[in-house]
Length: 286
Image (tube, rainbow, N blue to C red; front, side, top):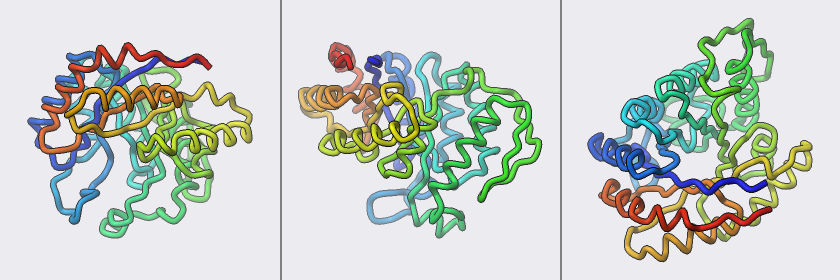
């Protein structure tokens, strides 16, 4: 199965002004990018301190929905342990409706120890099991009139969740994963697999792991689109084109340029200028 090549921009919500975020959103929408992303952290990551400014990811997605008209929006990726699955499902449906059915639903098991410690979030030591249960619950809340679930971590009794998503049966599910246990969840539930790390040298190795996970659960791996996020310094256009082409050769058809640095809107504009050339790259038929 050959999937179309699509491109997105990501402005995390960390170390960035609201003005710059809005500028990036406008560029993504007007330049014709396929998707637009933020991330889900409550304390700053990277660098030396966690006290740098950072905005909440799902509130930003609601704002993105209102600020744009055509680009699809999402979070790479939501940290499952930060929210009860009922709250997350309700928030996602709200954003899907606000955007007119443009939500891409990104989720992962979570990893940031400092956030769990400072805020008292439970579950990091059982994060894969929690993610497994959450995915089952959220898909049920998206599609069923009543949800009953008796798991190790979550318990739902005749749970209602209306309205349902505009997208049927639900928004595309993107799962971030790089380990064997989370790969099984990708194989069972994902429409898109987000490859952690952005390192082209590991893509083939991780793709083989996903193929094995799909074989174990009886799913055709070609049904799952592959995505990756990666940085570019904005200097040499050939560097971006060559990296994108390498990822495409490795089967990655959902490519997200992560806008790091002090001038994210300026960098977004440079990527937008190269978008026609990026689109001329051709996916390899499988």
